Image (cartoon, rainbow over all chains, first blue to last red; front, side):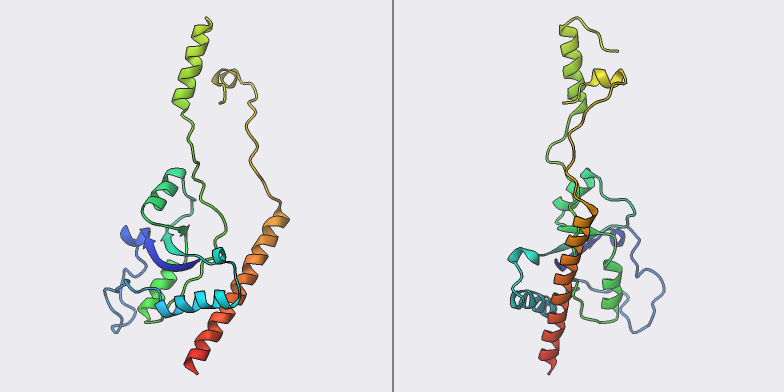
Length: 145
Length: 53
């Protein structure tokens, strides 16, 4: 996936890697990230994919959600990330992007996606399941303990 | 639906099997993706070099 934008959850919760003394006074104290990912390099990525005759679905474009880990996402967290616009999620990459942008570098991120976040389509209602069974047992004169 | 009463009685409950692939299949897919990534990055570098020339 070609990353076109990111959501940095640690950045939004006081764990931004750039917090602290500035490495150089020439660096911006408040680094803009509206253009974090080079447009021209992203164009090259898709041009290269075309020239290599890659399948259209081999290279996607999307938003990377950076989370701290080390736990993987719960289904509820997966649904949340999807609902706020994340296409992929990972525990890396964005600190390097911030450092590179602070240095004034043009950035291209190619993220190799390995697996789906586990977000079940349906949820078993244990409450309803137990209630249905208790009801059935009582209908037959059986009392569950 | 998993009956709760046998579970409470300590009896084994059969759950549906999850699809599983072998370690070799995972490694093969990883190598395939890595090769695509390598070719892609090499071509992007070539394109940027051509642009500079």
